[in-house]
Structures are given as structure tokens and as C-alpha cells.
Image (cartoon, rainbow, N blue to C red; front, side, top):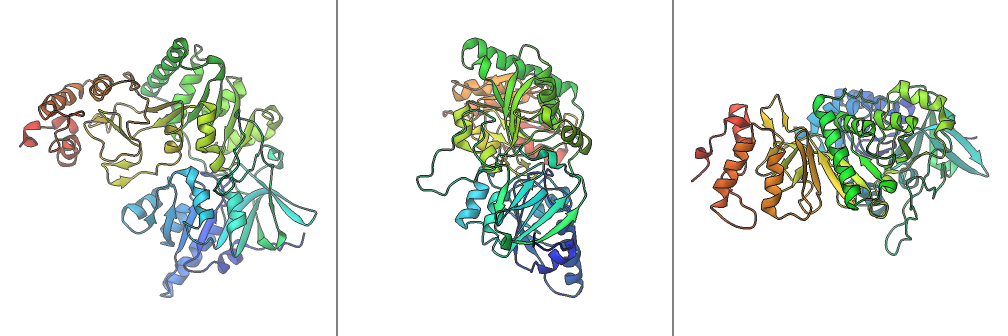
Length: 503
């Protein structure tokens, strides 16, 4: 091949202040790892010389610390979207230092193609192999894809490829890369079961689009999953019982159970608890991220097939997968995020979604992003994509946080990502609130019943006071955020005094 081999510093030297950088991968899986730290170092030197230097960054979802963390600490980011879990980046956008745009992941690549995100200057993608075939370059990606196909087509100045020897080329053939057509009158996306193949195992790029190849040998930067707790085990059991009940009622087909699971330690633990429940039949997965417990269930045969946007696994677990990759062929596919999160496919497959809530209000609205309605945690990610389109849309959360000082069930969410119209059920360690076919007041009763016992009398008293105002949903607007305000002032929601809020 005639593509030059360059260093990370050489790649970073080409990126200019004001450029829009599009980065492949999905979460830490398959994310580039050496060009962005070199860019952060360059930004520091520019700042020391008194010159401005910031870039905008769009990724498939969250990204590794070598991108978000390094660039945030170097104060090198102007605008960031659509999702981030990095603590340094979170601090930067909560302090107004980075203009952060939270976005449904299914819209991300489409917005790039429409030009809504801006003109993409540079693309950075990670590959395990690069081949030239009949005058075209084939990029074989690693453990995550994200928006890499769109990046390779849209980057106006060109694409940098980090060729990472840590990832095994044995993963070739596990990707199904397909880019959705632009509207209008786009063709249907013909996925009718989770591992149906509709695309190619590689991204094909013209050689003149590749600016340079940077050689690396670094593992993904996946976070360590916390161990499950008694609460998450109880939530998993309640979810399992709820699924079995739905099957017995005929609401769901036991032989076609397809689950989606959100991201994080809580979601990972609930998936593990579900897998241990023998009453739940073997199932399939169609999701945006596969974490440790899901991969264990695939190995055990509990999960018979899985489609994902990324393998967010520990380095040890990922290397184990590479060593035994043939055991997963025909059972596992990795897709771009606009396919893993595609509303059309989610609705067609009849998925049951399992996502995580920050808080839920008594009428079934869900806040999955902002603490106290103000401070962004990570972003909405793909939870809206699945909640709005799944056959059964559920959210899980422990009933309290901060050693009981915060209730996860409140009179009114301090921020709403998911409205009552799309949320079918809430699960805490105290049970399941099935919100389907219930009036507003019936939903309130069901949700208060699964709140922590310390908070049930508090929530019922709010309902008693609010009922005096009448209406379809009973609210006392002067007291709707009393629990949040009490925590802000006194440090414990249980210390609420309703008399302070009634006037």
C-alpha cells in the first residue's frame, strides 16, 4: 500500500484550531488511543504560547479516557456530542467550559450526513487490519464501530487510522457494517432477527482519503464493572418474574424473547441476575453495548444470539473472546450505532428494553441524565431509541441513593428524558410497577408501592395534599420539587416539611 505510516504527533500537527474531529468506536470499545493525547499535548503548547486551540469532537457514544479525559484536561474542546461518561469531560460541560449537546444515538450519524453537526474536518478510526483490494482500502475495525462508516465518508480533510496490534485480526468477519440511506424514501433496513447480516465486514475507503496509518499496541479502556449487590439481585429477580408473567399472560412469546440492556454496573448486574433465573427461557440480545455478564451468558448458552454496537469488556475478557472467537461466529455481530439503535429495527424485533433511571416520578416520567435537574451525568445515549420503540420498555433503579438520603421515586422529576407515554414498567428492589393500561392516579399508587418504605408515607402525603387541587394528574406546584429542595438545604429528602411548601 502507498498509505504513509506516520506518528501520532504528526497526525496531531495537521489538526487546526476550530476543526471538527469525528472519532470512531463506541464507548471505550474500538476507540482510537494515541492521536488525541498527542493533540492534547499540542493544545497545551499552543495555550502556553498564548494562542487559542480548541476542537469540536463528535463520537459514536462515550469514548475512552485517552480522548475525552486528555482533551478535557488540556482545555482543548469547544463542543462535544453526543454522549460522555468521562469525569473530566463531565466537569467541563457542567462548568460551562465545553458546549455539550446531548443527542439520541440513533440520530448521530444522520445529523452528520445532513450537515447539522457541522462540516467534519478529520476522522480518526481504529482498525485491526488494513488491506488494499482492487484499488480500494478495506478497514477492518476492532471491538466497536460507532459512526466510523459515516466518518470515513464525511471527513473533508481525510482520515487517520490507528492500526492497533493489541486487537486480534481474528475478529474479522464479526462486523456487519451498513450505512443507512438518506431520506427521503430510504429503503427498509431488512433485519428481521438479531444476527441477520445486511452489510459488509469492513469499511471500504478510497486510498486518497487515508492521510496516514499510526501503529499502536494498546488495550481498550473499559471501566471495571462493580459487583452486583443484594438490591440489584432483587431487581433482577423481580424483572425475571415480570417477564415470565408477561409470557404466561400471552403478552410476549417465550420463544422469541429479545432483550436490550443499558450501560453501567447496575445494568450489568441486572443482566447477570436475569441469566441466573431458570424460569426465564434462553433469549437473544439486540443492544448497543455488550458488557461482561452478557458475554458470560453467551458463553453459557443462555444467550443464543447477540447483536451489539460494541464489546465493552475488560482487556482480559476481550482477549479470551479473541482466543475462542470461533465459538461466537454465527452467534455474535457488531454493528454501527445507527443500526444497533435503529428505531425501525427495535420496533420490528419486539424488543424488551432494560434501562437505568436516575429518578422516576409518581406518574411514570423518567430522568436518566441529570442530577437534581441540573448536573449532567452522561447523557441520554440510546435509552430513548429503545424506550420509544420497544414492545416492553422498562427502567430499573435502586429505590434510594446516598445511603437513603435521596429517593429515586419523587413527586415530579427534576428533568424528563422519557415521558409517561413510553415507559411501561419501573423495577426497584421492592417490586415492579406495571404502568400499562393505568390511569395517572393508578400509576402513582403502583410507583409509591415500590418506593423505599421510608418514603412511601412522604409520597402519599404529597398525593393527599395535591389531590385538593384536582386535575387529571394531581400536583401541588409549590411542593412538586420539595424533596429535591430539602436535600439541597438539609442533605436528606426524609426531612421534608410539607408545611414549608403549602401556600
